[in-house]
Image (cartoon, rainbow, N blue to C red):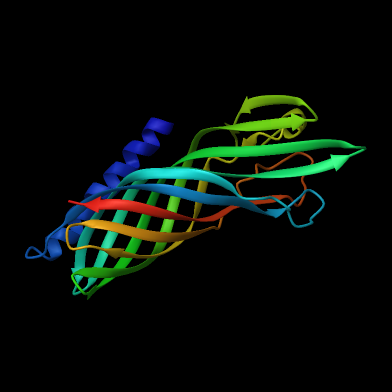
Length: 227
């Protein structure tokens, strides 16, 4: 399933690039490699319907994108990224502190529309668009007092009662929106800031049902080079 998802995303990027490139044969399609740091959280509701009180974790991302001209100063920019997301929380009951840390790995397909305006010898970049992602792994670290255990993140859309008690299951698919801002130098080196808001509830359906929701949110900073 994971291999099939990656193959489909590569086909989408290639077909989209060819389609846009055919509309503007005089313009140049370019490629970039990029990577950077994420600050991620899981927002939503707990099983009682109250707001989650999670803290951000530091993750990272790395990948490629394609920049295809579609109009003067406007570009279609699909990409393929590996990104780590998640959250952490801490609470104390009867003097015993419990810490949970979730780190979830995704293959992500951003589909941004980018505006670039020349400033000096480089370009200001402003973009937005949707993303879709598929979970491929991760870890849940549980520390109760001085005892630490670690388990693999698993992906399912529905859980039975026993599975819902483990706390390390998530839905595999995620989707949401991106906003980005950055600057590209004349030589192709660029830096950008990216904010991301997840739109899908990635907490699996449980039996019995409850009001819990998990949504990925965060921001990041990237360095890259456009070829």
